Amino acid sequence: MAQLAISPDVLEWARERAGIPFDTLAKRFKKYPFWLEGQGGPTFQQLETLASVLHLPTGMFFLPKPPEEKLPLPDFRRMADGGVQRPSTELIDTIHACQRRQRWYREYLAGSGAEMISFVGSADVGDQPAVVAGHIRTTLKLEVGSRNEAANWEEFLRQFISLARNAGVLVMINGVVGNNTHRALSPREFRGFAIADPFAPLVFINGADTKAGQIFTVAHELAHVWIGKDGVSNSAADDLPEHLAPDFKVERFCNAVAAEVLVPIAQLNNMDLPGDVDLAKSLIARTFRVSTLVALRRMKDLGRLSYDGFQDAYDKELDFLQKKAKQKKSGGGDFYNTMGARVDPHFASAVISAALEGQTLMGDAFELLSIKNSSSFRKEARHLGVAS
Figure 1 (cartoon, rainbow, N blue to C red):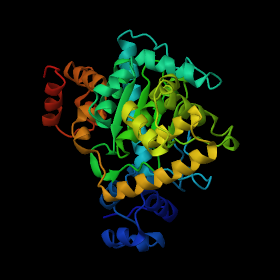
Figure 2 (figure 1 turned 180 degrees about the vertical axis):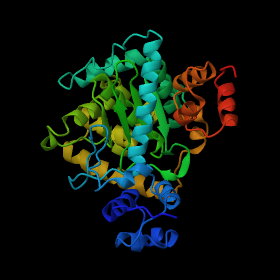
Figure 3 (figure 1 turned 45 degrees about the horizontal axis):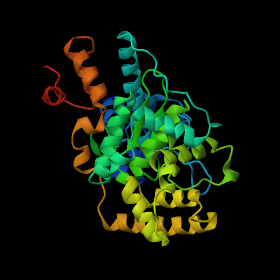
Figure 4 (figure 1 turned 30 degrees about the vertical axis):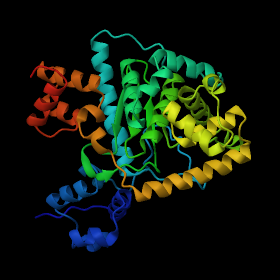
């Protein structure tokens, strides 16, 4: 079979991009070291297999040199060393998949005569976080008192996501790329991202994060939608230092809004909090169904902790939670076992209906829903109550 002339630089870029060690790839493709030396090249069949292993379109291997690959959304991620982290193939592929879904749904809504959603871009980073947070809670009908009805953090997360979806925000959640359990998403790399479109705003939540962490991310990404700013975030509940502004002005604002959405300072003022910090943070976390990290931040905002005291308590709590997470196997769990949990049901119902009516090709519907066969399609159609 004819051998293809592939640039050695492109071959190595593709391997490094996928995070696969040289020795691992060389074991599977015996002639890979020779290809890097410019001695021959893969056959087309070998190239297709290599492209699948490296999660890259086949056509990319025919580039004369490696491309400058950037995130397809503004990057608001904060690195510990202040540097810029090269985005993983998992993150890039997840964003591309959500962009395809968002574009499809936007066209679907436009064809149905839908109107723009008024709250998208209705706020600005110069606004008071408490005012924006109040608007979010009012729009979503997120009552603080109703949180006590949720049995646990996971149940509140379900309720929170459902309210956002009912308000018109597409919410996608996953801990892996599509349905590929071998391609896990890392919460250290990103916790979520937002596409602030006025017709079909989309929020993606990294399902590999803790449930309490996901709750904060939902609120944070909703703040992005309210100010009309797309972006990828890995922000936690800590208070971003002032010296990072203006680079992280958007993230500081969205963090402040998220904290106020979840734990309104007015309600917190009315609570009879114990003097002990550990007891107080636990009470706030249980009452508002937030993480103890968010609770500590709000105690700082309330004046119960100094900035230095907050930083010290936050770092200790974060260290404790990370050690606890290592001892306990984490994962999506039953919450993500059905497509209805990972993919917004409004979006899934629209895709299935369009496919059944012949407005969308079945192959396109399978790709949009990350399913592989008709059996899964029919099962999901029945689950969502869409006739098949």
